[in-house]
Length: 325
Image 1 (cartoon, rainbow, N blue to C red):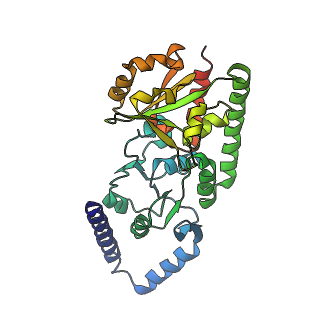
Image 2: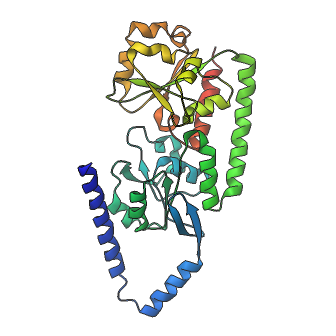
Image 3: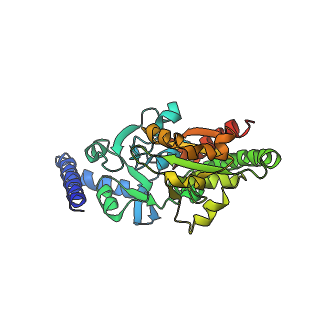
């Protein structure tokens, strides 16, 4: 706790010094010029209310910093390429998956310790992200207008719509969601004809963690699986007590909790040894998916958290794997 407190104090001092320096660069300008700029900025921004207050953001922001890759991909889907983004701590980065769409987006480091100095140097006109703390909001707001929204994994569509509304892209977002829904319906038709009575389980493996887990219907991937009409194992639903429970930890001795007809294994970078440990267990051979050869390894960069681009990437995997006999 003390270490965390010192870290935030350090961030506060860095930002304060940076802001003082930037302000100092303009001391040679006349007061009249400064006042006209302030009036211009005020008239060319609009108030956005969000979970931590309200911010006046540019009508057409040009230099957006995304505080997480989930908001980054939402911006990219709306043709608003951010200048930089913060990467997840453990899961893989989705940037390689996105290819040219995310080309040129500067990395600000991991979520646990973003590069504040680089944020200041990039001179953003909007900072945007999901579920940041009041303390982080105070820090980031000293750099540029900052907007934050709550991110509920199974409510990712609402989060996408909020970002679109904030950036004036609501019509484009609606079109993208309609196209996504059409793809969902195609998979539902296939599931109804070919996979009735089948269940799917989603298990994530971490690097250096001896346990795995299953993702519930309230998780990002679990909500997608449910949406296309494939049920999760009933025992998983029984262990899911509320919507704030996107995952349940699973020990090697309780592999029965991930038993399903089809099993998606979500691997974090460096998680292969942990996954191998489970595969070497005699209990692993009892899983229906193992016996039916219906285990598919997928990437945590878009299967754990995400938005519209990750959702479509998961649908791509479902089209690819569910059609196999």
